[in-house]
Length: 386
Image 1 (spheres, rainbow, N blue to C red):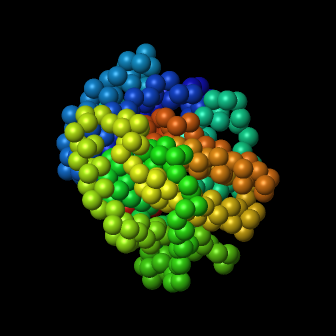
Image 2: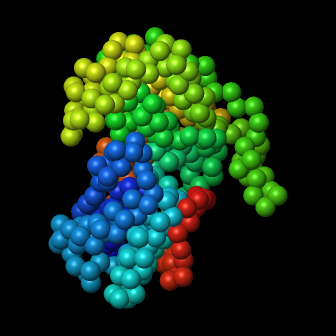
C-alpha cells in the first residue's frame, strides 16, 4: 500500500488546527492557533467569538501546515475534518472550508469524530515509536474540557468500533477544572493552573464526598431502546457537579469571597500572569482547597476507570484528551495501573489538547476503507462515537 498523506482540519471548540500525517503513523506537520487570549476575559469559551476566530485563522493555519510539511494543496491524498461533537458554529467553519478544498481539488473528503481523534492521537505516537501491536480489549478514557467518556475499543479489519461504557452525567472533568478556577479567581484556562498550584497545597486538607449516582442516565435511551453494554455488565458514569457545588459552599462558609475578588482584580491587571504571580495571591487555605479538589477529581477518574479495566478484563488502557496533560493524573494512572498489570498509554502533551494530527490519523482507516463523506454532510454537535 503506497503512502497516503492526509490533511487534517480541526475546529470543534477554541483551537483552529491543521496537520499533515502520513498513513496514520507519521506526523509531518501540526499547527494550532489558540484562542485563549480571546476567551480569557470571560473565564470560558464564548461560542460566537470562537466561530469568528476560526474564520480568521482557518486559511493561514492550513497554509502553514502544508508549508511546514513541504506539501501543497494538490499533493495531499485526502482531506479530513472534524464533524463533531463540538460547538456547531465552530465545527461548520472547518467543515465548510474542507468541503471547498475537496470540491476544488477533487480530493476525497473524510468526516471524523473528534473523540475518535483523541484515541488515535495515542495510536499515532505509539506507531511513530515503532509500537504497532496493541493488545485487546482496549479501554480508552477520553477526558477533556467537553468530554469524559469511557470506550471499549475493538478492531475489525482496518476500522475501529467503540462501545461506550461510561460518561459524565453533568460537567466534564476539564469543565469542572475551569469552573472551579473561575470560582476561585485563578484565571483561564483553569486546568493547567490548578495542576501546577496543587503542588503547593495539602491534598488531604479538605474532604469531598464521592459522587452518588443512584439512577440510570436518561441519555442512555435512544428511540425507546436502552443503550448499555449488551452483556449486562456495569456502566461507570461520572459526576462532578456535586464537587463543584462543595467548592462553592466551602468558599461561602469560610468567607473567602473577598480574597477571591481581590485576586481576580489583581490578575486582571497583569497582561500575561505567570504561575508565581498567581501563587503569591493565594493563601494556604486556597492552595489546600485547590490541591484537595484536584485529588478528589483524579481519584474518581482513576478509581472508576480501573474498576472498568477489571470488570471488562481490559488488556490495554489509553488515557487521552486535554486533561490527560495533568501531571498528577498521569502519575496516578501509571502507578495504579501497574498494580493491576495493565499498560497505560498517553499522548504527548501537545497531542493531548485539541489538534488536527489526531483527526488526520483517525481518518487513515477510513481512507483505506474508502469511507468518504458526501458533500451534503453537516456538523453534528452531539455526534456519538460507535
